[in-house]
Length: 130
Image (tube, rainbow, N blue to C red; front, top):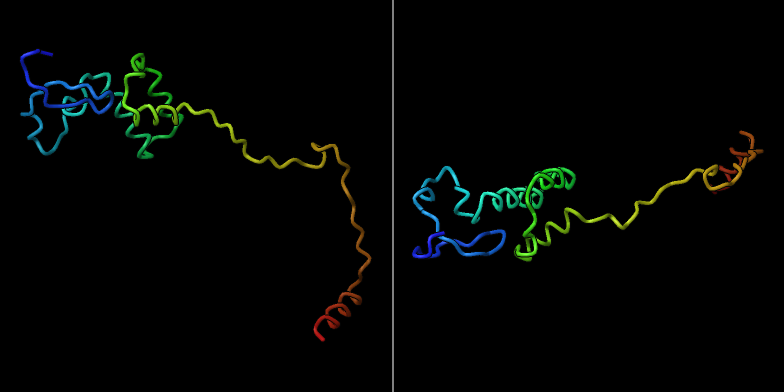
């Protein structure tokens, strides 16, 4: 960055101020990376975090994409970016309930004998209707 240029942008990822030419920003069809971040590397990380936060990509996909990027300066990221990163790399500590079979629990299956016949069933239904 040239020191004599006025800071006119702040990195969406780390918050550092920098100067970028705004002539590309006047194009309404694109958003140049220089208008969002101070480096291409930060832009790539920013895009992954944004897509994950907006549920465009899964946690696994975000981890895959971030594995190929330089995160060595992640401590300098803004708090909201750190929060999204933490969420992406969060270890699921809440286990989903697992239904175990009786065999897995070490229990013997219980056999229920039905002694009720059709006639007694009809009688029970009639009694309940009264």
